[in-house]
Image (cartoon, rainbow, N blue to C red; front, side, top):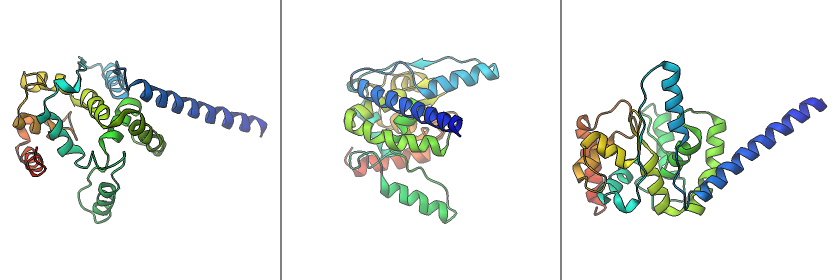
Length: 221
């Protein structure tokens, strides 16, 4: 029993230590751009294990160098209530749970803040432990970063294709243009692939990109 208690205490201390490291990293990211993320490391490791080529495209740019078209398209596609919630969109979560219970198509209820925390620290794997840690870190991100920096970080780290991370790399890779110069239609097509960036192609997302453009128009963007 004493040995078991020691192991439990050690495990709890390790969990608390890791959480503190993540929280302090979020504080630092108010000023420092992340050199890499958990998702980027995960993809690199997967490529090594499977013996497949891997080329990382990742260029962090200030939000001032990302077209408002791009910013608005991503918010419209992924988190329409981004400026209205404090990290969790309980309305979207309720709708997602209701559709799941009714046997309908599952929809995501994650906000941009939740997705940012997941990208930075947890990768793509799902577990209750990861969800619990994410749940406690999201308020920290909202408190110390603020909406503008959260959006800037998210746009710069999210996956947009095989080895493609961030708005600048995505625009260069898919459209041969800078994130500063991208137009509304191109931005909507890129935003449309975010739920499955390794499977979807912007040129095949005409239907969903039209929905995104409609949402943008409805809020005056």
